[in-house]
Image 1 (cartoon, rainbow, N blue to C red):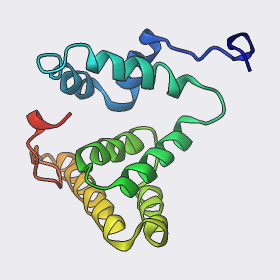
Image 2: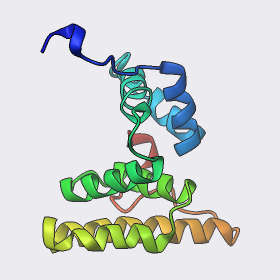
Image 3: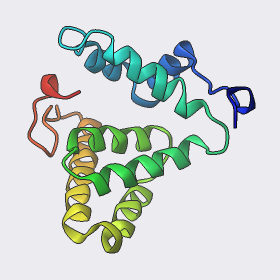
Image 4: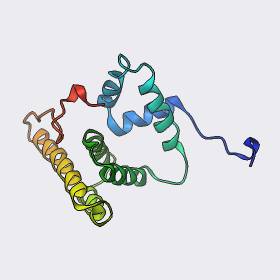
Length: 153
């Protein structure tokens, strides 16, 4: 195979930022923007290559990609802030709580019960925070991992 045989990968910065705004809202841009002081350009690389590249590929619907993200982050473990964001994103794009829960429960025999339980704890925290906001009570800005919002990335 030569480079001329390869299909160019999409890499669209504007589409990446637009998709990130659709998925995660303005909070994501603020969170990622906070990385520039520590790792200049890293946040832009993430958005451009992931949301403007990988997510732009044909073949999977956004919902299917979100299911894959939930599964991968649950299986990986130790990435509760990112899993929390993807639970929120799943809800934003129309996944139900039951679907998100079932994705995580389905993983238990494959990734282990402790990782599935950790994923369910994250999902429960996000669902509870959503209910609290819907009821008009300020929700805690601390996810299941106990990491303050300003430290999350």
